[in-house]
Image (cartoon, rainbow, N blue to C red):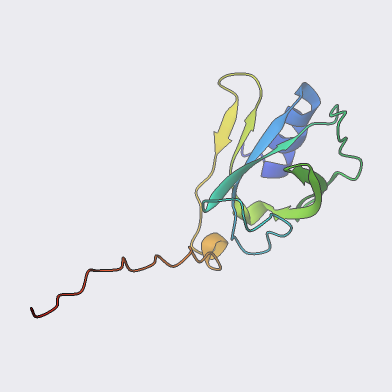
Length: 124
């Protein structure tokens, strides 16, 4: 029996904290601050968070919508299921990994690497 990402997320959410492992620049991902380094991020969700609580969590067939806190600043986020690479619970050994498709990372563009400044030779 194949269980949807939505069903896995909801079941783990009932047990406590759930992490969505996300392609940061994946198609449809919104609200994650650009200054967070790397192409991937693990987002934490928990119905019991106190400071700040997640009061607008919505889980549907398209993905997960919620206001999350990054460096003490609130950001309205949306993560489509197509950009979720894995879902894990707070208990050790509770995780589900998914194959990431070419479409889910199509919009991801890593920061361009700067060419190192090479020393210039001079005639003496």
